[in-house]
Length: 310
Image (cartoon, rainbow, N blue to C red):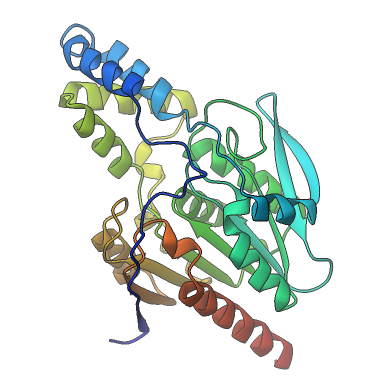
């Protein structure tokens, strides 16, 4: 198949990195049971409680290698809704790369990719989203991450390459669809990124066992909070806005978080694109495995070399 690369590995451990907070707890399970009853009394109140917990990622830990990486960074800060947002920059000269991390993740989770980019002479930048990594806050959402990335990118861009993983992928894609063509990057890599937010909303409401009335109340709450319909946050509708960017969609067949078919759907409808059909990585290891990193670095480097020779 044209523009499709197949990468398969055999990994014994595809599980959640130990530095990340658990997805659930006894407290969360008790809340879920209470919501199943509350939904019949007040769908709106139920939706408000779900949103409160849904937008609270919890703080992640840092490994020793990640702490050492951060010590080498030029760190800065910006403000968002009264919270301090931490920014990072590695390297001083070369083509610039912007990284956008995932939910319950942080910039340091890109450690292996950052080191690979630096070894090839790139400058790497990024931010810890609100309530993530070393940034302040307890709650956040994709629209907020979009706001933060956009503010940072407009101030510090343009960038040659943008890499977005999971939640950071959809947030970065929305940003690129909003900024002018003059400051859009040459390349966008999307790793295990959800194409649209409805998927998350439907999943969380279904997992709790709530009705469509709660889902509708949940959607209305989000739209009132951010003054945009949830349909806006959908990369399937940004074909024209992202047309001039060379796009690389990297999705794993056995991703337990983002269905593989969503990645293929995104690839099928966009133009100027490539697809990596991965197997054996799951959702988390796709971010740090040598095979994926080599693919990303090689295609970033080839584009830089082509730009330099033109």
